[in-house]
Image (cartoon, rainbow, N blue to C red; front, side, top):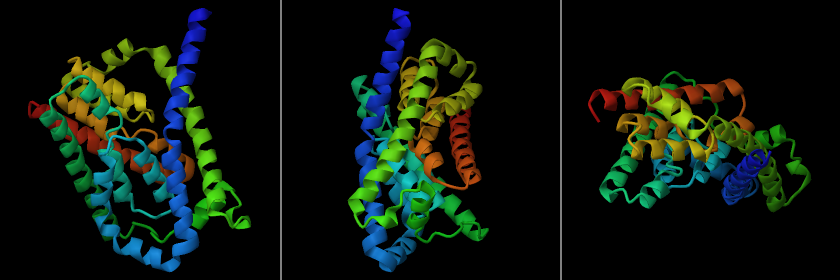
Length: 291
């Protein structure tokens, strides 16, 4: 009973920590979106549309910064149709989450760490630009006008009843923060019950299968996923290709925010499929090349 209580307290503690550090990113994102909606109007809409094609380049650069809050911000912006699918995908692919802090703590050579970051960033840019290009050619890129008003209606926040930008941003932030905490708590409990040893065995079955296994683990919308993948690589349980596949797919809690705020759901699953396809393909190619 005491051991079970200790595990429960440990899970709750980490869920609180993982959630609280995202609150500033979420709040600033919603504050920016409310400012766009209330102040910028049609001029902001035109500016976003003009810069749309370069979005994946900017998204990849921002995502590579070691904070999972950027992926949460990108999901929120996409839900409001401020950014394109390609930009969102670029942020997800380049997001480094806990990789950099672990590399630094383990005194991994700076050139190697920089190489991994550059590789993630380049792949993110190419994939994001490619997705946007294909969707434009197929005329399936959808309506990229600002839909922040639609997001407000979906969240039932009654923003129009209040003139305060700050109040609307706070309401959005609290709603999404609660959702992230509950899901993170559940995922943390599963990870604790399964155990790191079982996770290591699952991901190190064979060089090629480990790529798929690592990518599947990377899809877990929790900072613990990138921690586990990075540690397993440093311990020799994963090859470089498998590690990169998992880290490309690992977008932190951005995926939680996406499913919480964006509709229709089938579009979210399509984004997950594209993310997984890019990660697995890159990992398999690198593995077959002997990396």
